[in-house]
Length: 621
Image (cartoon, rainbow, N blue to C red; front, side, top):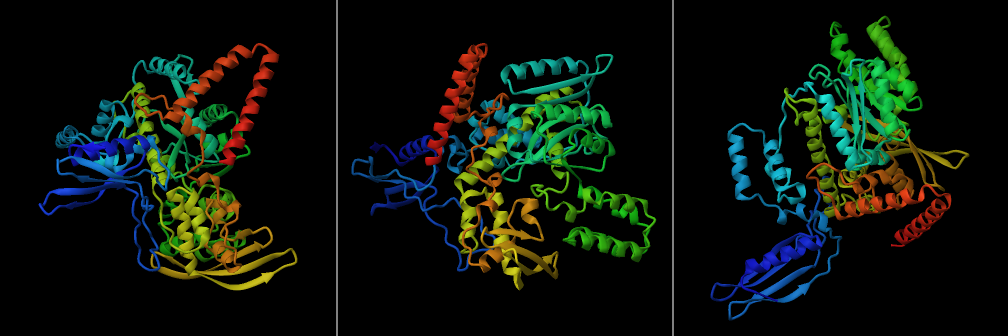
């Protein structure tokens, strides 16, 4: 191929790369004796390999370099024409056309966008509004040539919600519109005897599908808005495979009484096809607790630890020894690994500070299995112990409201807020797809996690491999049931304070089953440094599959990512569009066959056969 100039050739290669799905850059160039550029090479941006100091870094940064060899080289002939003389098209990594817009080489702020950002900033308009305006003007995220980070978007403003006249009718129209667009959209409204709006609950199909993946543990909180909004905003929040907040439903409430929460929880459970979460985190609100016992009777309920600990100055500020009392309670709560240790320490604290008659402490002790970590750490909580995720979700949506926002406008702004949340997850998927964090150790087990986990979760695992250097195995004891118990002493460093702490790790060598007294894996789903030390001690080089959770993997096909969110301007990937086309086709077939038992059986048999064939084909890839 031939081009008139270097720029034309680069633009052609960039267009090709955009369609294939990889980033490009100018690798090198060379001038002739006359000082004119005569040789140039453009490569995939994942070319090259980052060099690290001997021993590696304890906090290595993500890198996208994989030593990819894809490139084109060209030279300038005597007629002033650029001729491509070398082409290598094969990549040593995956490519993805749907993610091309996020690569740095394809992101650019146009002169008009830059000018608009400058003028709006001088006028005092928050940057996130300028960014949203540019996204709407472009027709959606997929049509923009920049991301929010490029505009350095950060805004934190106090907002309030006011119920406006006629909002109940507007909400009914909104729900009808959304249900017509998407059969999976769920909406519920409660009216009082005078047909005035009391409570609202809604959830789009994407959140319902996300619940299947991340609905094992949810946080629920309304206190952030109680004194600011006429109707408290009540989100159900989970944590996704990147450790980000993910919305699993929300409501607007007329009050915070038991009956109101019962109605909300029952509606939410109905929306989730009767599948209750395994764990829920709330504050100490008695009305919430009553409603949870009624609706989620089999769900493990814990109180927000942060809410409890922040009350210490209020409850014990009168004590002359308040500092030492605070330290004693903190030590009991955070350092007690077993129940007996906490019980003994609690009795000692009551005696030392003469607190036997303190009603607040007595009530806390009666409910210790709802908040003290050593009572809860054998249950999976995805690493959560507070309702801060609900609060941050409230704060997130707060950035899209103001004091004069009507309820109708609230729902519209909620859509924009959720669009942004979905985009952040998509960008996090992109980072885990296109980059990797180098291993900090030479252990094969760390490479196992590097190959499958998202970047944030791999970093958590990596810290455990790094933390192994602080662990010493001080004793070993084998019992009659083929279990060997090790005492692992860790040099714990916290805020410049150092201490030695002993953990007990039991290993069943034959099955490679591990139980550590810290219970980090059970609580967070992340293997602990003490268990890693024992595996290495026993020359076990491969991490057992049970300790690599699908929940934190990056290359898992998740149902919610295939649901095209029906908000105006939101991107729909080719996979999402194909998914929607198939759903519509299946729905038409179901409508035709449902009235005849024979046709129904025939169609179902065919679907089962196709599903079986597809599963076999996918597993063989």
